[in-house]
Length: 159
View (tube, rainbow, N blue to C red):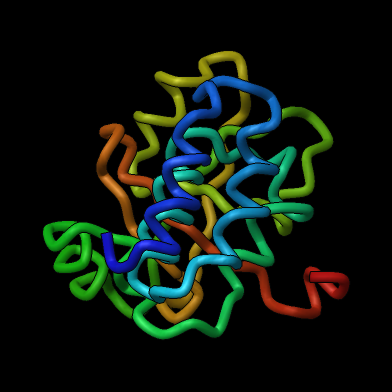
């Protein structure tokens, strides 16, 4: 761990049950208190991958992802960073959506349409093209080819 302060905070965070409904709020409370920027980004990414959801996006995750801390690229492991850097100028992304869901507010997308169909076969798949600059991270940890797209500020005026 980078320092004793961050180590103590993370030890407390890890004592929370992974599937506890309060886990996202715990990440949201602990992450801003971390001193080390690389540690911050690693914990935010780990928290999102472990328990992030669109339900908590505006209250918890969007403010964390919008942080101006240095080293945002530390959210990704080296192989994912290489893939992220190699993305084309315009990226085609997919998302399985419920009826009536506002996709302009969605953070999590996939490069792989088949993953969306496999994980949520009952949902409709939406495909979008987004500029690479909007892609904040790329993760393959769960085999989802997950893309994190931060909404433009005008799409999230309160964030």
